[in-house]
Length: 297
Image (cartoon, rainbow, N blue to C red; front, side, top):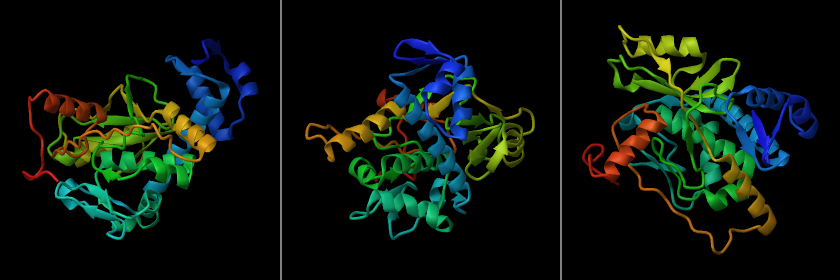
């Protein structure tokens, strides 16, 4: 269901008020048919959100075609022209390198890269943000990139929501509780529509095939993998605001405050965003201390 500035709208009204592509119309239809209410401030914001979702889908397909490999943290690789690898298996932007150039290189020279699936999801969102915002705006806001698990620049502003019906562009998680190989304890995947999902290391598969592959690779024997009722998205409203603000002023507002979240290193490959948040919560509460190889960079 779709709500614009406090008013619910249906398909016949919506299709006359927004200008979107054929793929965008499929996304609009799924938003309108969803049991969840999606709120937008204006029809323009609805158009922009659908456009960003399309860019996420395209970014996922392009990463799938890039020849980048799946790897656990200790085997992380990246093009050393743009990135350095930390002791924890994170991929850190080198000083003097433009963030846009480094993100584009992942897609251009994917055979030089290897990383795990949560990191891949963040790469997809960064690439989509770059395509939406443009090079100059992206470089202005997304500085000092560090690609590691679900760690992100604060301006991506990930959101976690309970949803049974994912919308194309959402990230879902296939949980594999009965696994013997830790790297296949689950798979983060971008929903592409038409029951297709992109999961790094598995490719573009149907939900049924994704589950079957996790059962095989994880050496599961008693309990099937399954998709949890939780999705992750970037803050569409915030990305729209960044683009609008930069377009108006041509620069970062002088009173802008940048807050970078702490980096929580861990040794859990292929974890969901909700599990990552629970680890962060436990660290903040002093319940556990998470690190990798006993070192923090």
